[in-house]
Amino acid sequence: IIFRWWKISLRSEYRSAKPGETKETHEDFLENSHLQVQIALIFGARILDYVFNMCEGKFDYLERLSDKLLLKIICFLELEDIARLSQTSSRFAKLCKCDSLWEQIVQAACDTVSPDMRALAKDVGWRQVFFTNKIQLQRQIRRKKLRQGRQKDKKYA
Image (tube, rainbow, N blue to C red; front, side, top):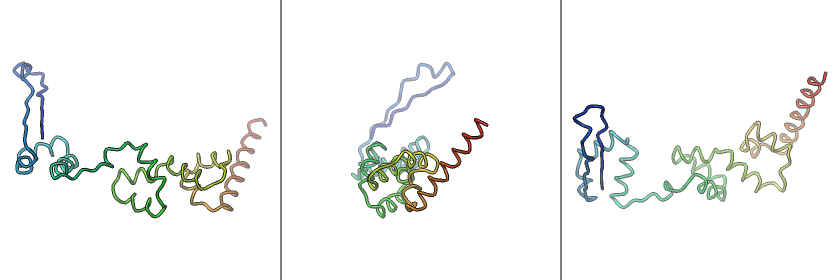
């Protein structure tokens, strides 16, 4: 583990201060409570946990993947698995509720996605569109068209 720091200060006595550096083996880091406290104070408990896991050889490769790539992977999961995955971390909860994920799921589940469905999804979200049955979906689209028609009539009246 290499821990580097810089002193940033307006005081003249610190302006010429050189950056500091501490190098520790993984084993030494796991025993150095002072350095662990410093990392926790500066970077937070989550980063400290991450460093601990790395030192113990536990790598979380999913954590390193971009959200875009994770969404592509998640859309291949079954609905039950998406629900379980959403409970594992706040990042996965956010991704599993993401509108772009549910848009992909709806497109995979439906033969065609009409412009009316897209307009409704813009209002209520793709997840809601997915879990709404076809009859309810048709009603909502019809109501939306009626509202839009009334608004156009008011503009021209």
